[in-house]
Image (cartoon, rainbow, N blue to C red; front, side, top):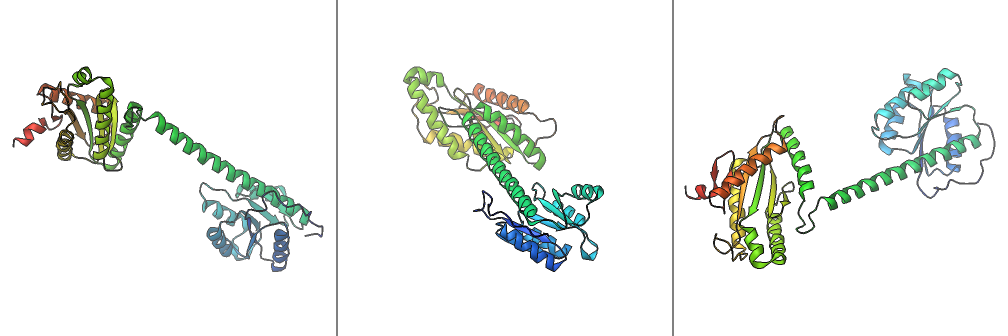
Length: 341
């Protein structure tokens, strides 16, 4: 390096750590460059004289910048090291500046092809090195800010999706969220080869409930049922949704047919145990519900529309057989029949 003072002006982000990995087999030159790097406000300078040491330090410390000599001992040059560094950080990008006495166009081209970002020809002036460091530091800060903004945007979108997929009255997942989740669980069950159960539930004679007690009390009733559904969906991927009106849907991943019927019997019993008064119900003056169940191990032909159609047919059968029961489309039996055997 030729002697020329580095201006005292420090980078605007000087208060943040900034580490540099310096790779050069010339110990004297490495010491001089390291001193200039520290003078340019780098907080840490890691030094290596060969390829193995350079890769070890890079993987262990993840520096903010690499200054990499091209001609190194051991048969592995700087181009090779740069390629290995890029392979070691998929999805990331650490700036690499090559240091070399070679200044031909082909040398520059090879450096860029190997994954380099800039090129300094030896001997270089300290003021030029400092300018390169400031430029790379600004790029580092801009990238970090972009990553932060991207994450903030992702979180904001996630919260927005949660808001638009929640039923305002019950707090359950709404129809939009239900459609998205069911589609995703079908794909997941297909990949995993596991059974997926879908239940459609309908509060029995709910129109009479509203006619008898009024719509305000009807809303409170829907809220109470929603709380119960949240309580029974104890596994992380179980989902309770308000399908529409007084109709609810349950998505139960990794639930076989026998487990679905057991779940249905428990749900019906728990609702009765809440003794939500229903003066207009022919079922016994307390609120009950009917449900249709479909269970399958999804394959390439499985669609959400088909599962909904089967669950809806089973729900219709449960109502036709007297309500206050669940009917399985595949098993062709209801919970009342199971209790009798």
